[in-house]
Image (cartoon, rainbow, N blue to C red; front, side, top):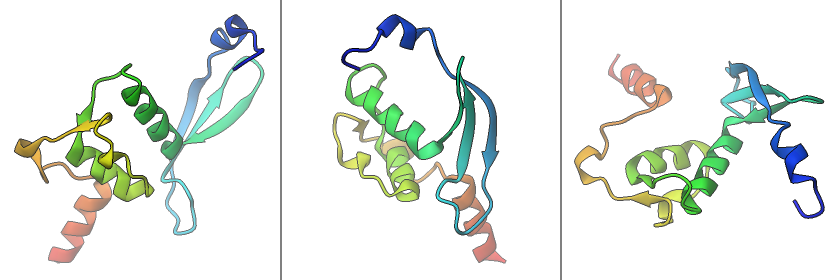
Length: 112
């Protein structure tokens, strides 16, 4: 943000006006957020939110995340943050206990 008015950027925060879960095979994002600041209305996908979260963790602004959770998100979005020791820690006690809605649904469908 070199050459930008930092105060103007800081006080022009975007707020979520709507979030929509996508249900189609050709959609790039599973969830899209509609955001609005003082001058613009735009969207941001959950993958971008994930990248922002990883950035904040890596820079020490948020605590590290459990590796099993980061691995599940990596699998969904094709990222590889679970290999970064600055972002995650090993959580052997909870390994495999947390699943996404899609993973739970797939497991139920396989039982039927």
